[in-house]
Length: 218
Image (cartoon, rainbow, N blue to C red):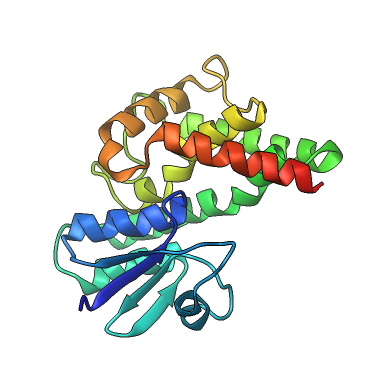
């Protein structure tokens, strides 16, 4: 029996972040795919507050929230560092990770809402993209320091999922004309990190069904 288990969803950027960190560290783990329509008793017992994935179970003890889990993995297991060693850079990494996480609701509003709420969401996403485009100027590859780390893992949703959601919904948020640095970074990110990301065509198929279901329920 593995003493590390991960309850996740294959199409969740949050689950993929945790898998990514475990692979970087070379940790052997048991992966348990859950079902949001029929949540397992293990998930409900392990995360009774949010009842959401991912959940990492280490030596029988559950941990929730992907960023919290990433820090735990970095501090607990041997292997390459995920967070920078320098205290200032660590603080900077946490700042950018929170920046990405705080924009999740705006992206959801832009894609799934209509009317005034959607427009508010779009404005916030445009502002986020403007900030990221500026941060990624001069062909910058990593958000903090000169190697791949914590923030770059957390950026997976912006790199892959955002474009998929745009495509299935028909809502255009990112253009090369407006955000050339972001688009260049995104292209390279998805190419360089393919092994840690779900296939784009499978994500598209999943979210096409999801969008149809959401639309039908309204």
